[in-house]
Length: 169
Length: 169
DNA sequence: ATGTATGCAAACCATTTGCAATGAC
DNA sequence: GTCATTGCAAATGGTTTGCATACAT
Image 1 (tube, rainbow over the protein chains, first blue to last red):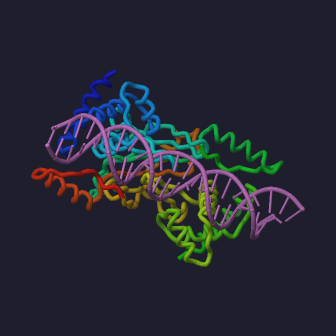
Image 2: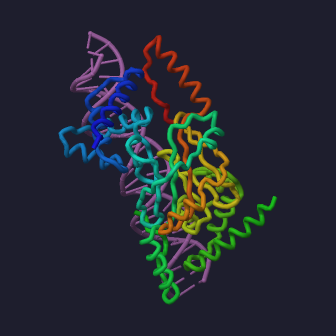
Image 3: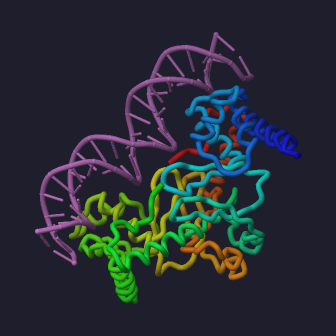
């Protein structure tokens, strides 16, 4: 894979950002960037923290939060808030443009490839707003939960049911 | 306005939902629904709590959270997570389809009218996923923050600057 | 009468903050 | 040598939970 090339690119971009903003180039910051760009897909702070703890380089949670903010600011990382609790993050480059299918039943987030949802014509209308990135969140019920829900509703007709509400994580 | 007609409709829909799920039809629940459909735009729990406290009907925060979950489940209310902290909600009916412009600088959320972003052709691809609703979040920098940022960067060239990071709320 | 829903206060937990120690410049 | 950055632990604050009381059925 040419992932190492991508890593080099984002590293350079990060360096540029740090320089221009007069921030220090600490090993922690580069280690975090390296880790994030070593995996595709979403991650949250806890998993990142644990992943780095296992590896050679451990950083504190505080530093993780500090650094991710820098990475968000310079556009190398994207932040998502699918549920109420944990924030999820995702590297900005090296992933195709995709929507997020979020199941209201089980909370699972699936990616769904998508063409150019955001057309140039639409972009034009937003002249006074400088777009960094955009996310499409599609909420609904996944196949598995759909079946469970239907079974549940059927049961409802014969016996009373205590809790039909969607389970929260 | 025909808002009262809409209110009647959603009230009926809610009743149906409560019945079919064997939930009780308490005055609190209807008061909350009524309040939510009395205003357009986004709201958070705190503002809803305070608004209802001012009015004749006070409900506890716990009940607010319980009820909003029911309203989410039956699709009368939509939930957003623009920032890390507070969840925002929005009535599902009576608002045009719109995107959300979220400024990474000041956190302000603006609505932006939008045509049919989600075309039938795209919908077709998602057969195994029952869509409840979808939201487009466009992150970027609003006009005001853009100016501030540029001024800040200019200043950076002559003096050192301690904190160029985006201000959090 | 029964058991769900409410309200209160305490608990939870991701994130933020204060501060002393470290290390990039 | 300075002062931003790190790491730790404590604080914060929106949301959840446990439990006694109220009330829809």
